[in-house]
Image (cartoon, rainbow, N blue to C red):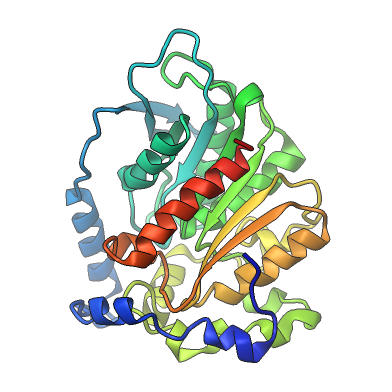
Length: 338
């Protein structure tokens, strides 16, 4: 879909969606942030470790080990259709979980992996990456590059069983995972992989810190300073302070912000954006989409007016979440040119 570019219309994207407004009343904040940052991170990790996702008999799930360049071993979960016929050729999607670079697990990619596989048969791999504050920037993005490189080189192995060279090769993620996927796409273009990427999926990623916004776009860069985009329980200014304090990134590094990539964005594969209208990263995502278009990249954008960061995770019963699921199916098909 197209999206507004005039400030007055951009601001309307944050007008709260009524069903979400009602549903969000049931949630409360448990921590005084940022002063209780360590307790918040540990609690969120503990809750995430207990999360269970319904298995689907049509999908197999196995865990493999992936080595890193600094001799660490990471987990990766491989999701693929059950009962594949001999010789089946499937695209590969490498999908990174979110969690503010400090929380989250590969298992949290399961619902999205199932959605993709049941819509378009494919292999989805959800890798682990090391988390801050124990492993500050750039450990996480280095881990992601190591896992993406290794998976590309070993895609045809029996444990993965994908054919990215002929069927398609996507990288993507949600939230922090999406932000890192955007960096990985630039690395893949410039440094190469065993198979080239054919698509990038960015779901509620953050790609452009305030100081990097070109002057011609600053009138559109509004959401970081708007209270309605920085006060939601799913992601707010206090939580961002905690996450960035733990990660301690170099805000001027292209390894943190793909917008800053020194060789530009031309030559990237097609990019599919999902943008929430009521979150801090809204406007940088829409500006980034326009910059990519200007540099000749094929772009598709879905905007969710009045909804917060990764709303489909906390509020899967919303009508808007069902729309997100339909959009995701269509967006992945578009990226894979199916």
